[in-house]
Image (cartoon, rainbow, N blue to C red; front, top):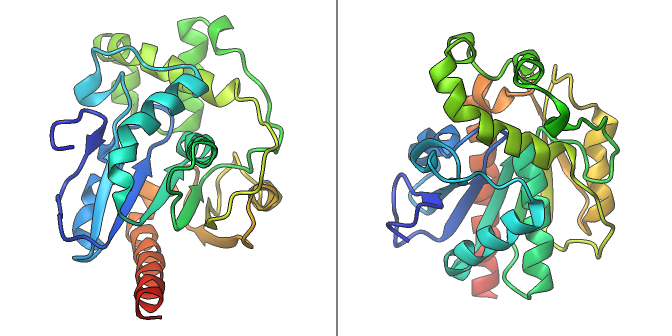
Length: 257
């Protein structure tokens, strides 16, 4: 997997007991998670997914069809599922992660020990729809600006935005044209992360994740808005490390049983 453009592995660890696989938000990239790798412990290997159309894959066409994205990603990911793993997705990443779990279960591939759904309402919770293709560039950039996740210096740079707009449009099309389907309950553990002042999610919205999982969800709230994983990064990583260590402890107990 060393030269696979789909993944960034900041600290490769052949001796890792557990992998943390990370999916970013709309417009995000693997860089969101890279700095986490040094703070998770020697038994954890962090793998950040790098979707087409961004960062080192900026010249590739971004994927705007969920089924196509999940199919391509799962094919690339399967070789990395030879070890126990935990999956985290933030915002759009949670949505992609949810569909990925169902895809893996359908084809009888290993599921994660734990899924962390961050900054995203439950998949079945109806959200206001937006037709991204119907927005002109000015309208779309105004919407991006409202989310406060993209620096003004970037939004005001025509050359940079010319490169980023196709990827951003594809990502937000994935988010807003998503169609939920009720399927079998997912059997992995689930924890939901929420920003205290995130205007895109309410507590009831986040509890909606319970409808699609067998296990009772755990809820963790952090200081910050929609991008709390960056605003409160230290607290988020600390909480994830506690979760990972608990899963490692359970693995050891099962091996000794």
